[in-house]
Length: 194
Image 1 (cartoon, rainbow, N blue to C red):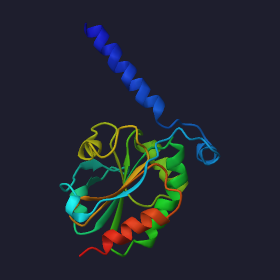
Image 2 (image 1 turned 120 degrees about the vertical axis):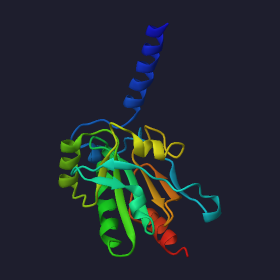
Image 3 (image 1 turned 30 degrees about the vertical axis):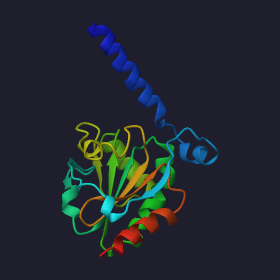
Image 4 (image 1 turned 90 degrees about the horizontal axis):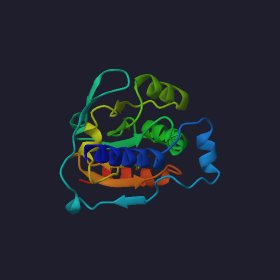
């Protein structure tokens, strides 16, 4: 009985792994050429009256410091779930960092949540793709994924959230950011809230 349960768990785990991104160079370019087996679901904006509770997690960052999502209360916060071998994550990295630069002094913070890699791999990705905002390593504890449970499936990478000043989800984009425009709109609408 126990052996069957372990086999079932292994099959489910393997299927989740196989439905996610793969790790091979040139993936971002290949993805743009028509690969369509990644998670896409478009953007959702959530009215203030329909938002849930404030979210929080505390994790170690790629550089070894500790980051708590609650520390960004009072700011609009963009949270992006990613990992290094994910082709759409590679493709959208410059877009995310560009928006991070655009909003650097306007009350918006950015946080990456790496769901798969260890620090060295994540740091290499950040250097190669010019990601200048902090990312937490969620592979061991899963506390960030637990905080967002019900909002994103474990295999929905990349997914980007916009949190309001209270730490509640104001917007969500499942799948690769194709350009700055949709995320920029979600950020600016959330910033404009009183």
